[in-house]
Length: 390
Image (cartoon, rainbow, N blue to C red):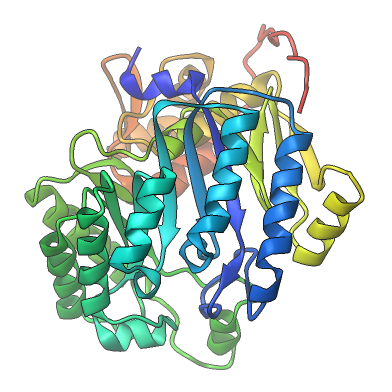
């Protein structure tokens, strides 16, 4: 078994923290700004929701995302983390991650978070170009990114990640190259690079509809290749489409998701996968709070993943990894299909060491489309449906 597939047996948890100082124009996550007076009430609701779930552990990784978890007092995050420990258990050496904005991070806050138990932090740097940061609605400057990474190092937080966004229309090749070089100089353990996406309903989407420049996909492809070359040369290996790291610093929570492993989730808009069922919580904050206050699990919808869909799901999430997926019925259907053969001839996918891998990550969406079009082979026998206890 490949080491990445070992995460299939991991158990993880995601906690959504929706609070932000302001909402970035490109963001379509379940977030709120100007609602800090609700932080304690929300934490109480998350703690109650944890208590409604079936005890399940110990957890191998915990991920606090958002929103901006670092915007919330560490003591509040500590209450939630303690509840996870008491209810599920958190394994020795587990990864405990926190998303953070550079402007929220100080030496004092880093020390508090480290003492609470956070051992990984992911900074939403996005760019080291002031003009790009302003266009993205960010509230920090390049110097705060460097200071926040240094503060995390000083607090002995063992794994540090920096997120970058490429393809903002006013960004140039030179400014993107500068951002990459600056990120490398900050010396994080992990770097994520994402293309700016115009999501429906966002202020960015409305601006583009009104005539503002939209991201250029060809330019974004070039910027991705710049990132690949720069980060690989600096000793970071790509282990997923958008993620690079130094050896041993892969995000374990994400590896669980991409391995088709199981994870619980708490908070508004949070998504989980347990016992063969993908489910999601209600998105609106007031609706979430009302559901939990009424003693109900705040689930907005659920889809069992069974039979052939399980194999399609395995390929869909697993092919994002540079290690790809192990051979199986879905792999054989893909490589034997007309679309699969074209993808192989174009060097997009390849069988290597008994695994199917994507060799041209920029075309992963094309591979995904081919996967979603696969039909169960003749004679396919569905495995037993698991008991759903979520």
